[in-house]
Image (tube, rainbow, N blue to C red; front, side, top):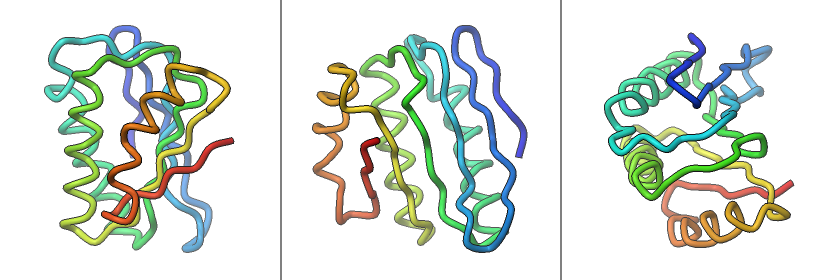
Length: 121
């Protein structure tokens, strides 16, 4: 799985060490593009394919992300729906001490039980 560098946003794909290790994507910087689905959509599709090929869950880490806009939330919801369709366990890990993350992921909490696991650190 390749890393992604797109403007102020970078995503580092952590190597899978074993069958019990999820494919981890660590987001850093800012996701403020008005149409992030053009970049994130294909990248997330590739991540889902890699997770399916390795038969591991997919885990996105947002703790080092400074900001994402409402357009990014749409891309994250699309990822939830696609992971559910493909039967891939998906976890979003965030930092509730960051107010904007707490508010954003509280809102995404409606998808818990619908294929998404939220975990705060």
